[in-house]
Length: 468
Image (cartoon, rainbow, N blue to C red; front, top):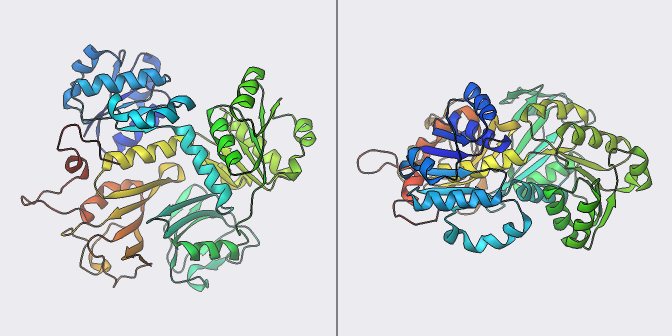
């Protein structure tokens, strides 16, 4: 698939990297030669130094024969204009990053008029994910699939855990649960019955939602009501998060250094307490009773500051700490620090874009471990190779685990003898490098024997915006 990315910042780089690794034909346009040089040195993409808003440049990049344009510059207005121009020049589909709270709330009703098929807002999506973490269960990450019938949780195993230093086959866990992966010292382990779980391991448990919740309780991680929250950082993510939590009736304190920004936040979210101060000041944190907060969330623009202050907050008595982290290579470090969870707006954005690009019967997609692994919910198509045969005979690649099958609303953690039926929802854990090999197993063939790709089926008629 031919894809143009306008904007070579952190998000643009990550999107280009993810798409190029899936063997798409990617062109990156930016006016800054230095960032293009970095992309050219590290990624297998074409780079163009130019103004991506220019119709002339887009024509020279053969926009009418590109299947998708993704605009992720720092300007919401520029992103919208780029998408409008691309659509009028014949580009099939467009994605725009729009982060301003006013635009985000108003443009939902005018995507078609703007020529935008999908709006992405990394900060808003991250705020929703943090809100879910605070209201579902105190684990590192949680994701629901199959209309909330299937749940996946990521949790760090403590020294006192009942499953520490035990082989998986000896654990007394429900049949509807599966430990799909172990993340240890930066390595991904696809476990079998003889795999031993060690203190400090990050495990990924997937299965029937209610049984996953019970497993969390068994591990000393039951759901607890969060009442008092302290947020460090009053940027867009801090705004969206404070707004979400305030609407849920939580008592929110937000610390921001910029006085003018504090005044704006006080007007925009009247139900919260905005404190003008340095969130790295220990005396300030003590004065604001950090030891009494149920959750401390650091969402400044600096990863290192978020990690350091979250660790400090944990030691000062905060019940749960969550840090925004943009760099995937920090994931192994977080496991050893004792931080309860990290959120990466970039990975959330990449998940949304990949789901859009892959199209077809992929319903949900969640990136794990800095993008090294994925959990995918896919609807098995009638006539596809994986349908109507025992799972052991399907021939899925090593490193791909069918963790759950939902048939007529019933959740099953399958064995080799179980059979996937047409239109079943299948939840798959896979290493990212195997993703392109999975789709053919669940995709039907047309009369000519070719696999039907959902992107083409959903977009064969010009002007249809029904991918998501």
